[in-house]
Length: 237
Ligand code: C5P
Image 1 (cartoon, rainbow, N blue to C red):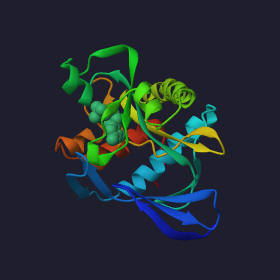
Image 2: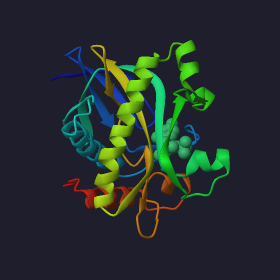
Image 3: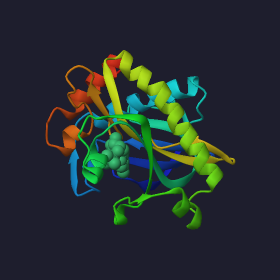
Image 4: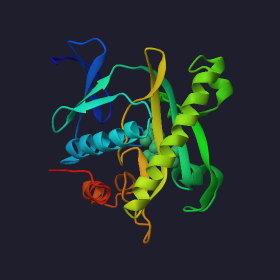
């Protein structure tokens, strides 16, 4: 497969066309952003760590029967994915209260959420990814009710698989964000799954081992990602 022109550069990944119209190459860069790109930093090894982390998780999800865009890891920082028609809606599941939920509703950080919550956000940096709901998504044509129902069901299936996987590594999956797209009419998981887009705490000490280390200036960001990876069996060599 031949890598062609860059189609899009996001805050942490870039997307390249290939000689195959159905496939793209994702490159994971060391760039790290927070607060809608207000804070940007390059963190050594991040692209490599997230590429391997994502490949490992996507393979686990595929094994569990969840359709994903992931095809294969190509190099240290590149992966081949199916070309999706992306749905501009972010799906967030929370098992424990943190981040935006704590800020919005004033609940205590770490409170167990039973049942886990499901939220939708519009993917729009200029508007700071506002929270939306099914009605708005339908009215504005971001996704149909059937697509939203499928996205919700898949997002919770991911929770079943990953909560267990992380628990086996002594970790709590606090919350995470997923993005979906359409491939030949089917709803497929896109984007990435890495500690950039989820919260992971040590189950005993509740130490934060995810991007909150960057957001909150705690340091040891990539070391934490590597620690999480090692605990669940991601090979970084
Ligand atoms: O900020 P908030 O608490 O709503 O984020 C919920 C989860 O979704 C967190 O794990 C966060 O890292 C992730 N997220 C993300 N990208 C966004 C918004 C949230 O990865 N644009």
